[in-house]
Image (cartoon, rainbow, N blue to C red; front, side, top):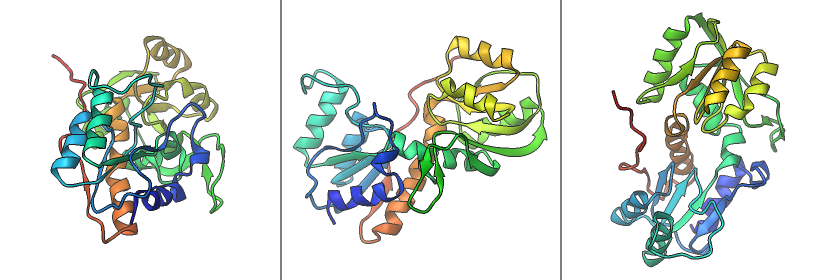
Length: 263
């Protein structure tokens, strides 16, 4: 098996056609023809993950976030991304990723997030198209839970996502119809309102977005970028193991949420 075959498999369930125009996905470092004998899967291709790949003898890292996101004029050891690129190249390790295409794909980041939170009757909010199997795809998901006070749902979110803490605003309603968007999806609040959801779980919420949610009567929960997206890593690894049983696939052990809460 080579890198291109692994990438081709990823694109069977998270096609490039599902990514946002501004995104950067696919093979971002290495050679498509390189043989793959071991894979390390992580949310981010941070320097520690790259070094863990080398320590474990992996020749491919598969991540959700891209190694190169913003255009670069130079690759040097003067910053983390440059060091990571140089380290991967020097150690013969390739890096591929599926970002917004995995967010939108059926069975991707947001389906996994909805399932992790125990939502039922999960559906795509405002589908952007259908995949080759006729399944709708798009960014957000919504589903239902047994009606409960916000405080009870907050406790479940924190526990199920293993989040260090939550930021939230109480919209004044009990929780029953929940929308989810892993990572920075708070600007999708209008879609949540159109769908009639009473609660929205996402991350990276701005100050004014909490106010907007409060004014609209929606419970808005910021569970953190890492916590809302990391559940997909184990699912992605399981898909790779099933498709390539001859190749060892491991999830990164030293990767964690670098944001901490004080007090």
